[in-house]
Image (cartoon, rainbow, N blue to C red):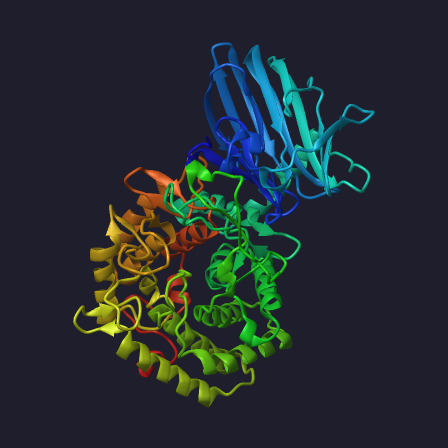
Length: 611
C-alpha cells in the first residue's frame, strides 16, 4: 500500500517530476513529460506496478529536508547500525531525462537494499532487461528505454532489479537512471557529482531573486520552487499537479487527472509570479495562455495539455486498484470539453494584469481577446458547468456570470489605459447588464447573501472572490454578508469546503475534504474586511497543514488529519503565495486584481456604478 500523501516529496527537472516517499521509494514518475505514461505507478497500485526503492535493509527512522532553497531532497535514515543520507534530485534537461540518487554513509556500516521495478504504460508493461558492455542496465519495451548506471552490485530477481550493499562513513554510491527513445543509441549519462553541483546552483540562483515576503519569505520561496517545478519549461505551461487520481475522498470516485494546464489558474498565477519578481516565468505563462487559446473562440477550452494540446480524452485504467482502493484511476480529463464561462474572464484578466505590470501585449494576443469578447457576448447568458467542473446539470453559476462581467470590465480598462482598439461603449452596456443580472438573480434576499447559482439556496466558496475580482467593493454589505454566510455553512473545523456535496447535484457521490485554496481565499476576504488578525491566524493554521517539506495537496481531511487530492497542488501553492503577499507586501494581489483602493475605500473603474 502506498504511503499517506503527506509522506511524499517532489523532485523534478521542469519537464516532469517524481514523488519520493519517506521510505526511500519513488512511487510515481512519468517520462519524459508530466503527462506521459508512468514507469513507476506504485502510488496508484502495488509495488509490482513500478517503483524504485533505496533504503536500509533493516528498520530505520527517517527524517528529510530540501537542501537550502533547492529541489534537492535529502533523507536521513538512522538504524541501530548507523546512519545514511539519501540524496535525490533530477538535473535540468540534458540529452535525456535523469533521476540521480546518491547513497552517502554518515556513521557506522549500514546494510542497504535497492529494488528497481520498471513497469511502463502505467504499471502494465514488463520491459526486456539486458546489460550493455560498460555494465549499464538497459530496460526496453516498445518505444521506451530506461538506463541504470551504478557501481553497486545488481541482480535480477522475479522481474525486479535488486541491489544489496553496505555503505560506510564518507562513502557515496551513485545511482543514475536515464530515459530515452528505444530506437536511438543510449544517451550519455550525467556525471552525478557535476549534476549535483549544477542542479544546486540552478535552484539556488533562481530562488535568490525572489522578492521577500516578511516573516513568510522562506515559506513563499518554497511554494514558488514547487510552482517552478510544476512548470513545463519548453512551453511555459504550468500543470495543476504532478499526479493523477489521488482521491478527494479515500475510497471514492472523485479522482481526476491534473497533469494539465487550467485557464482559470491564469490570473492568480501571474499575480503570484509577478509579486515575487519572476517576470520571465510570468511572461512564459502568459504566452502559453495566448497560444493555447488561439483559434476559434467557440472552441475555447477550460484546460489544455502542457504544449497546448486540446484532445484530453478521459479513460480509466482497470489494472490499477487506485490510491488506497480509490477507483477509478483516470487518464485524461473529460472536463476539457465543458462550457465554463469563467475562463473568458480569466483570459481577459490575465492579459490585462500582464499589461499592467509591463509585459508587452502583441497584436495577436489582443486580436484573440477581441474574438473571445465577441463570442462571450453571445453566450454569457447560457448555463454552464462552473469553475468546479460539476458533472451534474448545467446551471447559471453566480461565479461564472461574475467572471463574464470581469471579461468586459478588463476589456474596458485595457482600452482606457493602454489605448487598444475595441467596442468600448458596447462593452460598458454589457458590463452593466451582467452586473445587474448577477445582483438580481445571484443574490438571495431571504438568505441575505449571494448563492451558488441562480435560484439556489446553496453557498459556494467561489463567492469569496466577489471583492478580489472587483465585482463589488469589500465595503459592500452584500460581500460581508456572503463571507459570514460561508463561515456559517462551509467552514468545518476552521477550513473551507467548496460547497456542500450532499446538497449539490454535481454528478458524483457526496464527500470530499476541505479545499485549501478556498481556505486561503477566506484569509484574503478577512484581510479585505479589515479582520487582519483573523486573516493571519487562518494563514498560520493553513501553513501548519503543509507536510514536513512544505508541500500541500488540493484538499485536507480535518477528521483524519491528512492531505487529500492530487499532489503537490499548484492552486494551493499559488493561493498561499498570494495570501502571504496580501499580508506582507505593499502591492497586494487581493487589492490589485480588482483595483481595490483599500479596505476602507471603493474599487477602481466603473464597477460600483454598474451595480
